[in-house]
Image 1 (tube, rainbow over the protein chains, first blue to last red):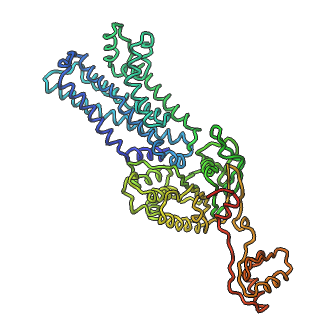
Image 2 (spheres, rainbow over the protein chains, first blue to last red; image 1 turned 45 degrees about the vertical axis):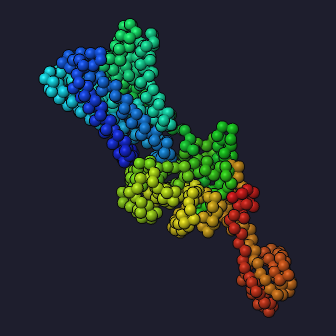
Length: 264
Length: 295
């Protein structure tokens, strides 16, 4: 299994995805820094400033929204095996197919965590830097900010696994990316609009991630638009548990389903 | 070595392979022949565990491919639909699969030298020509130095130079007592190497066995100004297997005797011979006779 994980890591690092991942991680972190520098109080409409708890949480939550980026990277990497037909060679070298997929999950969990840590490190530096540049303290204690950043990194690792699972199941790279992007951008937000169905939102990946990162902007914005009361998110610990359950389920499905599919 | 027993596979309403059984003997080259859509590729994929049969079993050394310990050290395969990650270099591709198969890094250099991949090791695979890609496929298959090779149309898309290289390369591999099962449309690729053939058509076995047996008794073509006299002499041997056919006023085709036996008889009776040529039917003729299809 160590050889398989190492091979999957080599497969990933020998492609250009790490470069794009690096650009995306640095960009995501820098984006949060840029927003902090501009200051939420200067947004349209104006939002609570950096020195308030709500303002700091909102900026950190923006990073949570970008958690779908590593999911897309995971999907791209796995679906590429089918698109470029390397899956045949992989199945010849690792004919017990669950082993190759399990190795992918381990390798990409590590890659997703690395992506998340890089993103939150850049974002953290940018956030504290922006606060210092503006001469205001952040609205949350440093320990709380660091804890939120760590949770966001964890969320990104879990999302990467979800992406890997979607890629393994759908096989078609374009379809997998469309499904994943469509889900995170459209489906979950649309569910928030439907009375009754929005009760599901806290238990969906986006809702669980929002609970973990304390980011309620989407739920609050929809509530403000529709005049409904905002959907109550789960406590952070429960959000983390729901998210991890999704990751485990995704991993199980990703390992189990392709086992008997013919590679023609 | 390779045993195929009662293999069947349907894709929807299409029967690709139907109750197919044959053996591939160890240490020799077996040509797997059949017209398009005969089920060759599906059979090879079932043998390698890529496609699950509806019925039957295919084993290599008594085990199914997926149950082989270190499969890539025992069996190497080139399949026409395998691909490469376009952003990987040829070297990175081989390093990745060497790692996956648990083969030493030094083996990567060896197979690159063996197959000529070393000349383009640093190029990304999307820039490789068909011939280069085929060399890289062969290099990948040889990473584990397997004794068994399963090659599906290894000459597909190659130019004449590439086919000539492939023929030499396969002949070298065959000379190393490896068990090779090779399907091909280009029968000249396997003509000089294959000792056994398995012929399939519409998913069913048509013939299997040693090429020499399937060809039947070889004929000898000869020309002599005393053809009539020679005919009488040869038939005078009274051997039931001997038949003599007149193919011209001075030409005969003889079955059941070797060139040496005919020459000895002619010399003993003072009959002049202008030509004596053993006729070996081509694999293509054999294939057309057996499969009744076009190559």
